[in-house]
Amino acid sequence: MDKIRIIGNELSSLPWQDQPGDNTLPVWRYRENPIIGRNPAKGVSRIFNSAVQPYENGFIGVFRAEQTDGIPFIYLGRSADGIHWTFDENKINLTDENGTPFEPSYAYDPRLIRIDDTYYIIWCQDAYGAALGMAKTTDFKTFTRLENPFLPFNRNGVLFPRKINGKYMLLSRPSDSGHTPFGDVFLSESPDLEYWGHHRHVMGKTGNWWENVKIGGGAAPIETDKGWLMIYHGVTGTCNGFVYSMGTAILDKDEPSRVLHRSSRYILTPEEWYEERGFVPNVCFPCAALCDAPSGRIAIYYGCADTYVGLAFTTAEKLYDYILENDDAGDAEHEIGRR
Ligand code: BMA
Image (tube, rainbow, N blue to C red; front, side, top):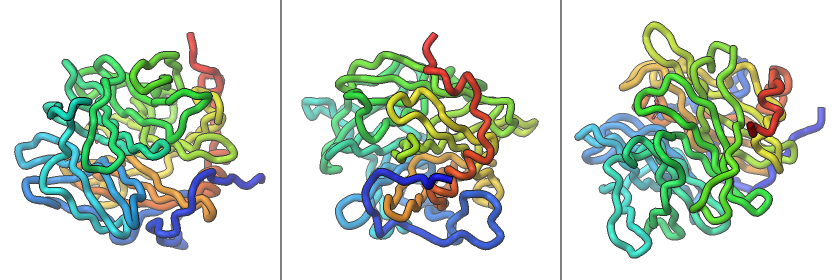
């Protein structure tokens, strides 16, 4: 089989542990998980569903922090090794383009994407209904809001880490006002991060039971020579509520609404105490994946049971082999997604 190659930078400080011998899935957990436990900062009871990036000599991240008043906001955290984190005392100050404070009434499930020298944060907030919010920063000191990309209701905004055919690309999941019992992933493009259009369907739920209710974007897609490697979440329903697992697919490099390959099987599902037990049991919710291009190593940051942050590892090669082994992408995935 032709080996897959990540197109990106070297990151020799990427957190890493080798795959345990008894591991049968292509993804394995950090042995000391969870990396962020309960009450991690003053006034914050839980941190989960969070995203990180390498920054200066270490790592920086935007964290979904559930405050002790129960309201989620985004907090900034820093780490020397990507594993042990310290958090700012207060939530991130968001301003409008004039520097005037411009805060949403809540903000959750942030993603952090670097495009050239700018870092973009995308989250879910109230905009007369749950919708995506977006801000940019170059120094992690000032954070300037951009226009909200879409009307409500929409969640799970994930930007691609570079323009494709000269356009910014954003994955999202249109939804309803509550705990949405449906949902497919769509792609929209923009020349300027303000006006979004050319909306395309990427992929939906399937007949595979682990993702038969809804799916949503997870980590920013990883560029490879075989296409964009996508790590997302898939949801099933049980008599006791939803269960969130991780799935993976490969999107076409130039036309990413086309799914080239998609694994019919999950790559991680709630099995450990910190994934099964917490504020919302049975949730593995990926929001970031860092990689070291030369070795193909990938570290996935995921929210666990809406309570903790976990770390898991894989390689581009293991994921790609697994996707091809279990590929059941059909016409709906292969099409461009325009009707
Ligand atoms: C989704 C989002 C996520 C959360 C998940 C499980 O709808 O709210 O933030 O992790 O539900 O509760």
